[in-house]
Image 1 (tube, rainbow, N blue to C red):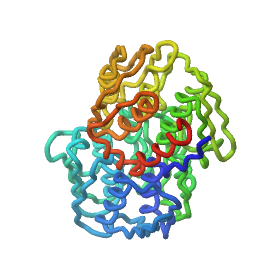
Image 2: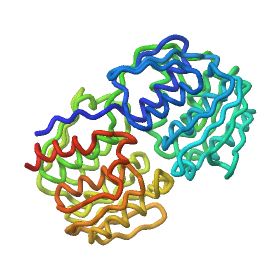
Image 3: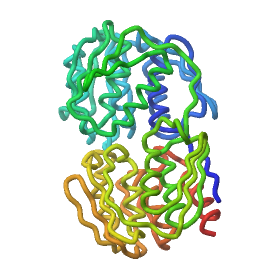
Image 4: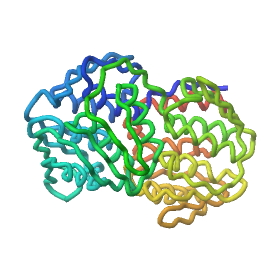
Length: 411
């Protein structure tokens, strides 16, 4: 049995950094994720004039409800989608001129539904090159608030950014959503806003956010459920047992629902108050599963699908095509490199049972492709990666942790 210490949630750490920066007072974040994405977010806050004190186990942020402490800043968002979407939204509530740019990978990812909504709210925002993409400049004069319509069918982060902005507006926000993917991430946002003193209302497809700002607090960061999926999948595919402490009943993250997929495939799952355990039973069944709400774990399932006794069909995951890479095609390509039969459509992938062979995995610089196919490597010798280091985005110590896991559950 392996007891695995998973780093803090990337999604929760990013939201907590925004909330802490916007709150009135000093917030302490306990056990935040330290990775390229979250360090980039913290550095972005520093560039905007916020004080961020960092120790190994806690970060302290001096909140500024009035917005950035500087009137001009140039912020580089690295590869971080949350950084690239949340920080311009935070800056819009201040007063000054703020330029944001990002890596070539992040420049390719879409922003337009969010930036359109911000413009509809009166924010002076200009894309410097391709419309709807970084780099961009926000000339901020605060945000009055009001009503806005948003399409969040590509990313729930667009809605999260506007929800987080709401209490910083003068009159509050009413956000009507026409489409929404990864809805559990929005529930994370609403629960965290409540912890910082704001209650979000709901009227059908309209979210109602009051003005009034946030209260500083001490906030613990739970382990990352998306990262935990690789370790849970490892148990299911090897017949071992993995326990992740800190993720149990009441966890904020919807991606813990991945263990229910493993249960359907034949693994034993025990979710306790403060931990989750997955035990492999020596068999995995094929299935058809809708992963729209837990799409970050789609590559994890794809990577273990060849070991199932029947086909694995994953549906409703069109949004995975606009992540760090086109994850649906990346999974298909790499499975074919391993000698596995795969078919795909606009929003689905079907994987036939097979015996993967040694191959070099093409990662596209995507941390989730590396971590997913590392699970395949537990039963297939000779798997390598063209960019193994890209895991630093969310879990710099992943490879070392997986070596230890292999010792514990494979031998």
